[in-house]
Image (cartoon, rainbow, N blue to C red; front, side, top):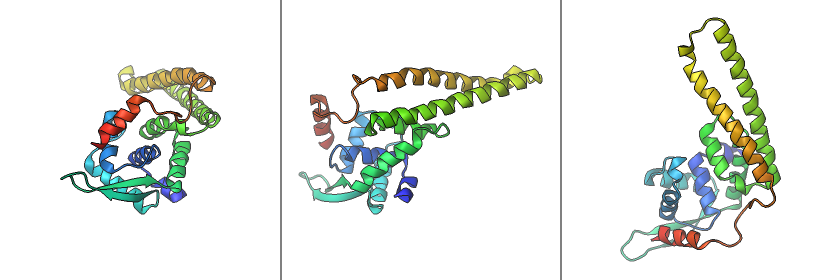
Length: 206
């Protein structure tokens, strides 16, 4: 299992998460991800998605459940998420959520954090918050020492940006953690799919 998790890419996680919603063929996955603007998080092309699906199948994280043809369209193979695939998504999210050195992976983990129990999500985000605070303190010390040594400020502009990003994320973390902890804040899978969701799924299959 650990080897499969280690080899998962952000796109692989997103494909597995889609199959957690129900069985799909790759064409539907591609259309759904574009509908949802998931291309903000990962690069989505026909080639990368089909390649990822092949890798996930070989790893035993998804399995083929049928092939169909609609009219003159090419055959479409439908896949399902295996138990190993479902476990791999959660393990990957657990690994990436508290890390501060992999921003691209964190964005995908955050998009799928609702799959974890509420308390676990809060705990892991709290670990991330502590790491961000430590990184901010270290960077502030480094900037101060550099200025004291006479380093011209124009050479520290990149550090200024990094400090601003760290401070902004800490502000966001301090707002989102109580929000998630609030029992009135919906968490986990939605019991009844919305009409918009069902319409989106239908459109993606066409």
